[in-house]
Amino acid sequence: MGKPDSEISDLKKKRIMRNCRKKRRRQQRAINKRTASEAVLARKVNDGLMEQKALAEKYHDKWRKLCREAKDLRRKIQSHSRKFVCIKIVLPRKLSDGKGISGKGQLTDGKIDVLENYYGLANREAKL
Image (cartoon, rainbow, N blue to C red):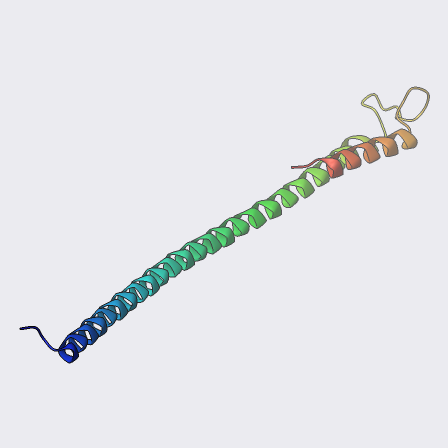
């Protein structure tokens, strides 16, 4: 009528083994899926980092170029103002009517030096 106990226990063992096998397969598939998604995620992160690094290098180079140009421009402005002071004030030392520039109420060497210092400081402190 019924199956003997040994057959039932064998069936239970087989069912347990089959379920364990299924469980192991499911776990292995889940692990494989996780590692695959981690690899994809790591690749995306690495690509993003490489893009950021490339952009940083690009803009750093542009920034350095602009700084260099600003320094050159500042030097040109300083030399231009020095030339102006030198050519227009220091060298002639005579007014258009032939009189000298020194004397009462006129430009003296001290005042010329003060003007040169003023322009020099203004140019050095100017932030371009």
